Length: 243
Image 1 (cartoon, rainbow, N blue to C red):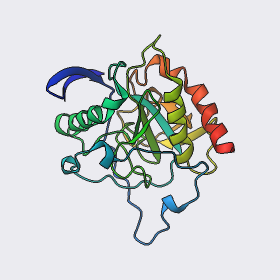
Image 2 (image 1 turned 60 degrees about the vertical axis):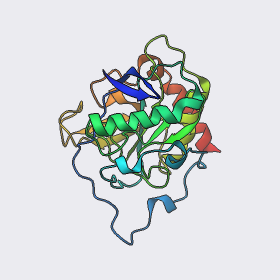
Image 3 (image 1 turned 180 degrees about the horizontal axis):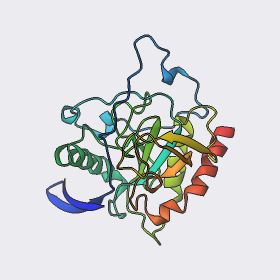
Image 4 (image 1 turned 120 degrees about the horizontal axis):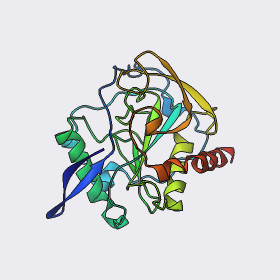
């Protein structure tokens, strides 16, 4: 990870950001007239999601809308690298700064994650369109297609407490977004689209249906503390889908 200065109100703070990637091989959008993936009955209900309009995302900042990549077969869990002591009321401001960072400093088309969950368990729509259809994010180099990127707002290195509300929020969005039939406790085969991932382009990787960013890319993300909570997250997602 590295540090960037993000504007927060009148001042600025240094926020380390997890390594993200957007320049994967192109993924075809769904052809016109094809049955919309969003119309397929999900295995769990849609949770409450704070829209981009509500957190006041800068739509003029978006360079290009991401393509749709079909049903979601896997989840990649991230952390954003923000300090953990934020007030949950200030999250929209943090997200606006994060979007600006991703677009103006990193050169990406929009915020990288499909969803962001804060320490109070509130779910925010990240990349435009993610709350309505399976949008390809910019969260897992080599594996952005047919996956969803869910980021925990904060830094979860070893020994850091991981709020139960945060795990619950991530579980709700993962249970809803995963395609029907996907086993949150199981494995999935994904084909890498980028040599810079842990797998050469074209190689097949066997990964957990709910994986950490580090499983597909050389990074510490989502932090050791959050990574150790992935088994509990998988169980929570399975329970929600069993209902």
